[in-house]
Amino acid sequence: MVDGAEEVRAWGLDPREEDGLFGTRSIDIKRGRDVLKTATFSRFGDPETGEIKKEELRLKSFARKIGSNDFDFDNPKQNWFCEDVEIEKLAAFLSGSFNVAGRYRLVDTASASATLLSLLDNGDVNAAELGEALAEHGDLKEVLSALTASSSGLNAIEAAVIARRRGVITFLKQLAVQPESNETVMQKALEGHTWIFGGQYVGIAHRRSLVMLDEYDIPLVESSGALHIIELKGPNVRDLIKRHRSHLIVGNEVHSAVGQLMNYIKQLDQSGSAMEQIFRNEHGVEYDMSRLCGTVVIGHSHHVPNHAKKIVDQTIRTFNSHLSRVQVLTYEDLLDRAEMNLRFEEESLERLG
Image (cartoon, helix red, strand yellow):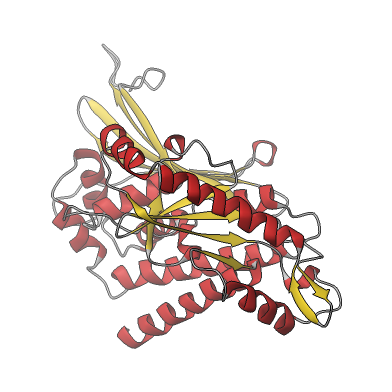
């Protein structure tokens, strides 16, 4: 507690294996004469693997019961919540990251929210000040000041982002070598982690307006507004490369996936001006449909018999050298690149620290 601040009550709820609840943490943001405001952070996932599948932040306010000193917990006056990437957006907003109009890159869904709560636990951020800012939408500069008041500050958040992302990559690498992993499994595991594809992407385009794309496609948006279509296929492709006479070439599944993506790009090219107008009128965003390109993510050298990773990489590089608007990546290459980017960010953070 600081001078002039009220005591803050915090409590938790133990995990419940039967419904996948990993536990909750709650805090009284404001306990006033007429109203009580609370915030509750919950994690849900797979009890067997320990994988976190969803995080939720729920805010409620309760009025006092008429003629009683108790609050009416059965009938909250306000009750709203956000989850996963929505928590990340709120955390970035409160830290002052959106003070200037424009497009932004979001960090990993779980990291900032978990770090904010960790900072509260460790006493590096004043809980009363942060809670009041959450409840009353006060001066964002005060929140930013609270986050950077200690030596951990924003460096702790950045370090937590890197650590969380490293865990995501480790999980995806393990998943990609499992024989039963298919495009559905990989698509689900990649949800909310567009950073894996590179820092030039700021989000995912509005899918409902891109009716020709199937459920496994990810329409990424670059900072310039250009679209980049990701076509996901399964990692377990035994004939990813094959021998043709005295040379190695990519297999039929690669050709099929590239042809599918090229047809998507052709369709979007033909309707480019109309699509730009739809996005502008219906969603209020400006997309540049004149510079479309795409990536096919398919296969993994682990599943390719009789050929080393180096040979698989060389064969795909040769194939890519003859393409212009489409490239092919294995899941191995995609995740290795993401890991290298994390290593660079980690080294940069260490030098700053």
